[in-house]
Image (cartoon, rainbow, N blue to C red; front, side):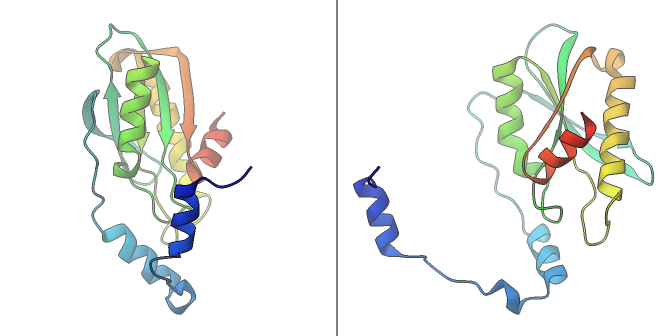
Length: 165
């Protein structure tokens, strides 16, 4: 299949800048990238949002609940952000979680699990497990249907979701 004219023109312009990531210390680079504010795009059809903390094995885990305007009990998806184990945040998945809640008609609980290198394996896995169990155990109180609980995630979060399933 040939490239579209727009794709060919984009490729012809080349990469706007090249970064030699090997020239940077990967731990310092990860810290710098995590400290950079993430600009969240506007959400056309937002779900109701509540920031909470969930009891983890070693700390209180930040989390965010997205609720569509539907009667309880809602099915619930526990979401784990991507980011290659070192960069992800709740804000990076915000648009996707709004979309999932509003189009699927379910609550979404997005988990801000700990990141490497400060928290190596198995810490992120253990936090995600604790958070998933917490959501299931507190489903009735939160207005969720414990019997309709699913997990999701992108990239590293997808790996964690698969481990939770």
